Image 1: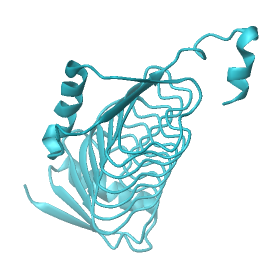
Image 2 (image 1 turned 90 degrees about the vertical axis):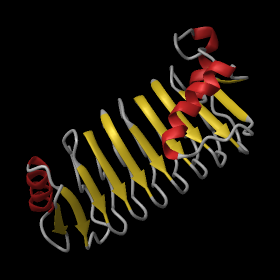
Image 3 (image 1 turned 180 degrees about the horizontal axis):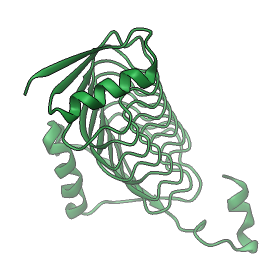
Image 4 (image 1 turned 180 degrees about the vertical axis):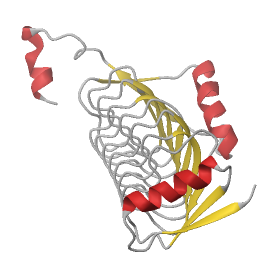
Length: 230
């Protein structure tokens, strides 16, 4: 597979993304250089595409991904992979706020820390963070797994639906309506299956699995105080 180099610089973002899409349509690997932490790079990339970004990128990189493999050399801004349905995104450094927001499938792997509200409103897929996840990570996650290997900030797993937050390390505080449960061997095996392709399986980890307490699933006036805490 031949490689196509896209130079970002100060060009219009629409022109940049069109060039990336055209190269992907031709079956070429794409290497994006001179990124200048620009926003909205690599939106809606197609299934089977391979795109790498040198340096850091800004907000919304890899949003609406439908099956591409995306590699970001350094850091990324807010909402990495927002709304993605398939594919793999790897961040060599840190991810900003709302990583994986509203994603419905695929995997995001952050080698550093992830900012606040990681996985907010996610509907599926997996987010793996080797470092620490920020405050209110997992907020209103409907499905999918957030797996943090380096601890979690305040109000972790706040107002979960059917999503799960798995943390190895210290959790500063729990959010509203969270139950911490002991995972079964089968459940740990499911997590290891997610971690194995990226070389992060470690049988010595002491997992804290967080799920919804289900108090917020149905509103009851006699329990209104729980809603007021969100």
